Amino acid sequence: MKLKKHPKQKTEIPTASLADIVFLLLIFFLVTTSMNPSKGVGLTLPPPGEQIEVFKKNVLNVFVNQMGAILVAGEETELQNVKEKIQKMREDYKKEKGEEEEIIVSLLAHPDADYKAMIDVLDEIKLAGATKISIAAPHF
Image (cartoon, rainbow, N blue to C red; front, side, top):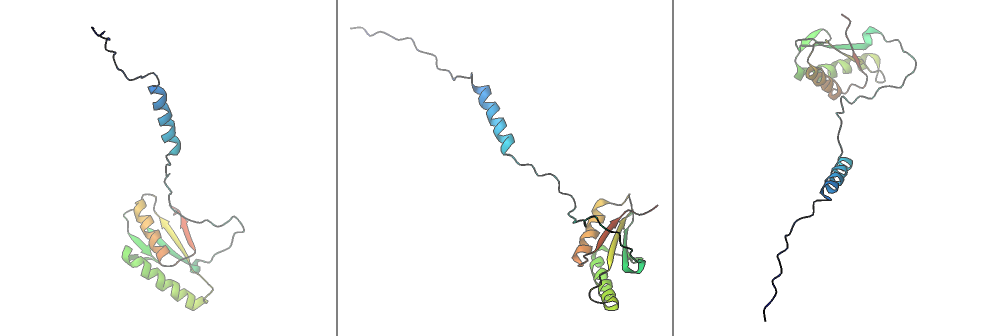
């Protein structure tokens, strides 16, 4: 008895739905992936309201020039000393005016100043405990 030989069938992977599967995977990953936008500088701005007149003697000016030099109350200061200097001036101001009074620290940076230098100084001002901080553009 002779057995019949069956012709070998070619095996192949069906690719007709491959494009559909790739498209569905692409959509899945686009929908489930979260992208973190740059957050920038975290500042809480006061609500809009009345303008209050501020006296110059209540403001402590901190300048960052285009070369990255830092001036606190007109004296050139290193970045490491900004925190201590501001804390000392805040304490002196509170002794003179009373505990409820708070000095306003105004940070002014030259338009050509390094952004990192300004942010570093702003961080030092926050570390010094200043609660009233003004970021202003200098008038040239």
